Image (cartoon, rainbow, N blue to C red; front, side):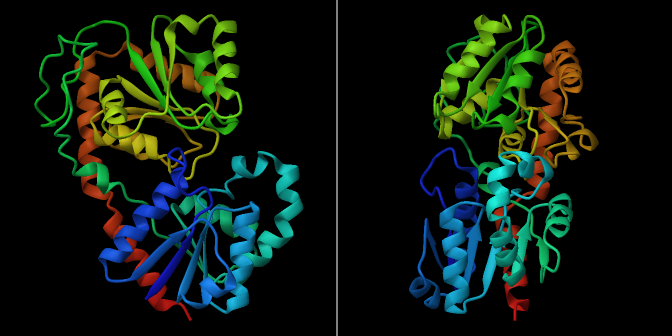
Length: 352
């Protein structure tokens, strides 16, 4: 089968949608399909494909790609990536209202809409009356699950880490009783909730922020940190990828994703993969953090987040490391891109 993925923002290292689409495409190739990934397409491009996946919503490239696929008569598969979750719809609502009729038209004419969770499926079905088919196919993170991390150097900032043998070939976890360090990974976007995290940071705890500096957002959050009196405990690191990013995740006591709306939340999975517990809100589909004993899943408000952070900060590092180890076991058991691609392949076989 010839498959075309259209992914606006392709090549942006901070674009989680592009990263997910690219990994899905790689696994589809491994299953024997002929797959290409592009930031845009024309009707002529679509005629050369058996199916066109259009990722994300609302933007002109997305709308043009949908139009091109339908004009070419090629089956269209929409992948909204959480764009129809309630909090996401609320953000810049007036802009989205302008193109909502067109988006509903394209979604109804799509052969299928692929979503990550049952929660997202419900949100899509509420917003799009008369969609032909909505399928839950999940996500995968196995490119992280099986890494041996052979290039990890010692962590110079913490030379006294004792060994933590449950996860081989990863830097050892810190076990002393010093102040806790939290890590935020994501875009500096209002929906990500960094402002709420800065306000809820426990006394004495530190926060490290991995995020690109877009449109002056970095300066705005630095200014907010000064206003809240926590600037001396917050470090903005810019963009980190690969081993550098994994090292930050491993060295943190907990990853914090204080999101208002998240379709998946790759940062949570990345933290768990390297044995670090996570704290996130019910704006993200990570209820398993509680059931698997590897983190906190809080209500989307400052008080709940503050309570979770305080609980985490009060625990010993040995206990937090054990939570992280349970999280890694969960990821190893349940999350692979191959399984996701196989589910998608099964859906495509059934398309008419």
